[in-house]
Length: 544
Image (tube, rainbow, N blue to C red; front, side):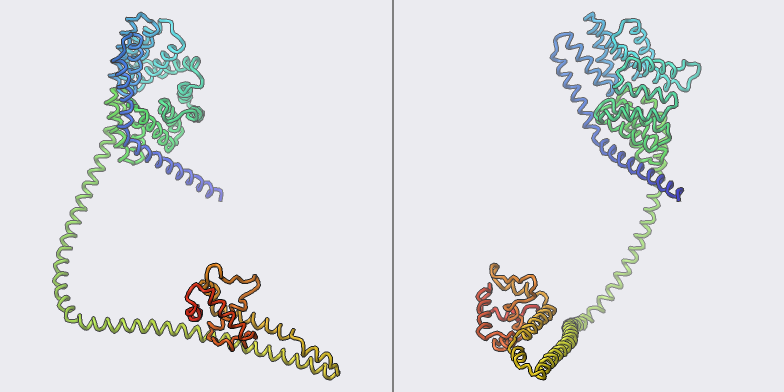
């Protein structure tokens, strides 16, 4: 039982993870369709800065604008970033401002790393390292050293007799962790990187989840943080969560107009291995477009490592689909031919049938008319049969009921007779006279009789009260007391519905005077919302 429960929990978790992944991939596909909008948004910001640059006259402002424009270009296209960063160095040199010059060189070193110009980046950083640096510059310097060794580690992984770039990267990361703000996304990412080097993947995951709780998808750091978290899940063997956070990272890159990225390429490779060739091909093509556009050498190299694999499999899939389509078209053509031959045969048979049908049309018409009459007759017969069945059943029920009622009344009269006899025998003349004068027995029996009548009538016409009230004006409708089935007025018209229309008969039945019955009838006709002379006939139709 425990094993079954465990299997069920595992299956539920896997199914839930797969649904979550499918949802985020669908969101990514939707966002990819808006790539041009987000890229245009970045270009709009850059063009706005360029307009400010065109109107700038002071070197200080020109320097700041060159540097900001270069910063906007770095994750977008490195060639333009290189141009504006180089111009900021020229202005800083002209201003003889060492702080600005170091800031621009640090920025240029980042761009050199992205472009794969590792020697130039190394020379620039060596020059900077010999100068006094502020804390902010020191952090930027160490970040550049970390990234330079990371890029070299990947780019030269197949070459031998090279420095241990991983150890160098780790050393710079340790130095960076000592001075960087411990609440910054870069601190968390660097710490996670070091944990990954030490094989502490669970801790690495926890660190990045904490970091992400303080970030939004619109933050530039969000893409890098989710990418790092995806790597942690990958090391833990959780492929679904790795793909999930790679998709999140790719979405952040798109929203921020970042074209120097790694997430979409990594996600394409994962999907390729899982068999989702269509998405894998689409994502790797976009990753290649971004790598070429951004002029990022490492990204281009990484994409080219897996593009041929995905492209080959995708083309094989398309070729297989093309062959299947060809087989389908051949089968379809054959079926169309058979269908055409069948159609010709059917048309010939149709002509023969039309000739035969034309001869039988009159007979069919006559049969149809007779059949229609028979149907109508059958309906009437069925209706009459149902009515007869209902009446027969009701007759049986009420015969039995009134036989029982009559028997009860005979019994009661006999009991009354016996009571009088006993009093006569005892020669109690006064009690006999008192008993004969009292109406209590009659009134009690009348009450029971009316209750029985009310119940029997409402069994036959359950909607009588509602339909009767519908004949009256809105402010004249009859409202019964909580213990009443019918009142005196309704009993008068209940008898009319049963066919007892003479006031004398109704008066005898209800033990009222003829005048009282007449008054009831006149009073109700006056309350009617239909013409007075139609009221009685309308009552007689209730329940039909």
